[in-house]
Length: 178
Image (cartoon, rainbow, N blue to C red; front, side, top):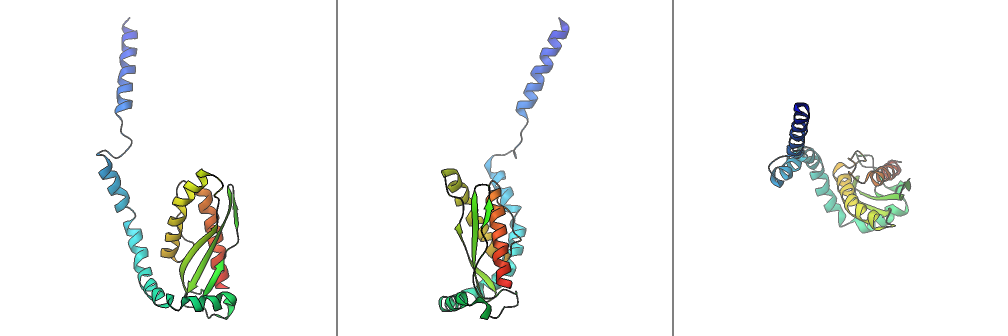
């Protein structure tokens, strides 16, 4: 009888401890929201510093961009590469096939700096694809403009889209360097 009582008490104690264990950051949403804001800040600050001066110069050249882009898009090899090694023009990467469909990236380079990123082809067959990509693609575009390369982080929950995006982006960047 004592063994049954001890076994029952051990089970109840184990359940109480299990249900009282907190897997999240205790203290509610304030501390959970504060952690992501403080964790990526150094990486964002590092990326924002180098891109602050190029984006300032790209906005100055953006006013001349429509005529320069159309002539550079027609003959991207005629444009002289800038110090970054990227020739001015519009470049479309090869379509990267993913499990859920192809992803293709198009970049616009002005003054040797990537000034615009478009994703003309991406999976959008169903509501789930649309939901994932409406969240992931703006993040990937923003990261690309900040990094000025394909060395960016993938978006959690959009692994296949991120893989395809990075592959197509690298293809477009390689074309801009050629």
